[in-house]
Image (cartoon, rainbow, N blue to C red; front, top):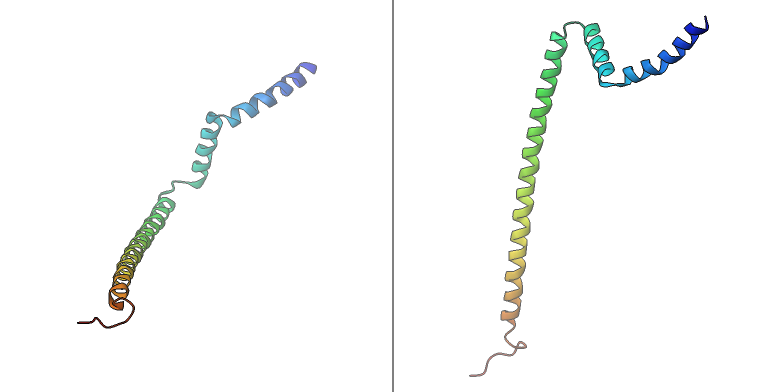
Length: 102
């Protein structure tokens, strides 16, 4: 009787080690897949959902790229416009606003 109790006490940590190992995880995954059945219909539906999500993300990426290009163009035009305005402001004064003497 005592031998049986000692054997059970020793088997508990061994069982925990095996279940936490890669082998235990593989067995659990196999049992889970078996309980789900063939999975053809579920896999097909999941694949369709993933394809739709990929298409949505692609469209979102295209939108973000277009927005980035627009902002870049806007900032470069603004910078070149500011440089042109600064040059015109200095050249238009003509030395204090007095007309040149001739």
